[in-house]
Figure 1 (cartoon, rainbow, N blue to C red):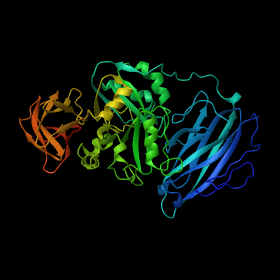
Figure 2 (figure 1 turned 45 degrees about the horizontal axis):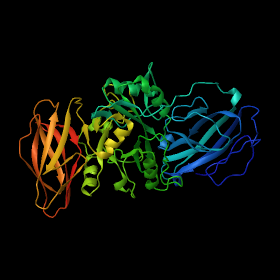
Figure 3 (figure 1 turned 30 degrees about the vertical axis):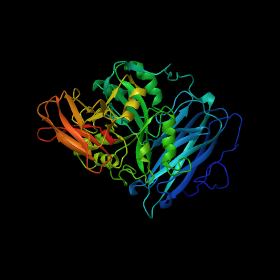
Length: 510
């Protein structure tokens, strides 16, 4: 970005995107409300880059308010914004908010409340798109208020004393791994007006839909964590799972189960490559899911498809193979879904779990008028308890199915057997040369006549029984010359409509 200048004082231009200064520069206690303005311009050279605009917060600052405007929207220029404090990331609202504030007791959703440490802060700008030959100007008006002028003691959200376990009974858990709220760009109708949609509506929609869990995955922020922690006791049957959708210029990925922020500025010095993000997710015991990898990327949705060339697929836990937005507009078998992308990775030898997510941005839309409703599609995970830890581990283990037809009672499971050895979805089954395995598919809760569609690679598959409402049996063996393979199952109606997607069992030679 081209250098701008700060108003209200005279200071030299910095080598960063904009310069800012205040007078006096470091008062011990701010005598009154102070304001500074950061201005600058961007051009095509700034396309898909990040920049940080530094400013000083003196000791005693009690409130920081940012108002941001820019030109070029008619030419599809997009500038996203976030904030860092001297200790790290403080929030990210992307293009969803042009104004936000932070105090110790309260913050605009997308940002986190808490102490405002003195020192160098930075307004973070991201530029998903600016066309060749275009320039745009921006202005950030930053107001710093002393602590005495800030609202006093609002209660902070309590933290849980320990892990939340809603059930200790093993079983299939039905939920949604991809939702958005007011903490990023979730919006809904409230009293006739379109407004940011509080997360409680997502929690209620999940409960109303009979979901066992819902993950809140707002873009590049974890400010929703305070809502999850404070409201979980009000939803004793629905597990509220923290997460974040890491939204980059080269693809989107959910980090589910994390309670600490992860870096998202992929391609910048803060996050030079994907491996650093995967390291952060692993340190937080979260799982990483590549979202809607087959969507096109462009001005309409920059970075929506996956184009991270150095992806180490051995470290990716899941792929979102069914996304609610595409499910609603194009059905469950559109090429815009990630099924083909996922199966290609499976055939390359990677063990990655297929999941679904509604990608809902309007939790009050229960009919699908604007959004795929919460829980459409639903992902089912077999877990020993209903807890964040076991749901995350269950996805990594791979005993997972995706309900694309809205069948809350339907279940699909598979067990492969060879002599005394057996394997369920996500497991390995070892075969000696020339051995065969028996695959038992179990179905419950499916209406009417159904048929089973085996999907496999590296295997010879033949049916030993016809599909019925209770399942079917297949014979498996490694194909000639193959040392490994995989098999999974789709469930369809008799006329071919897709109902459910299963995950693979992996077969390999000893």
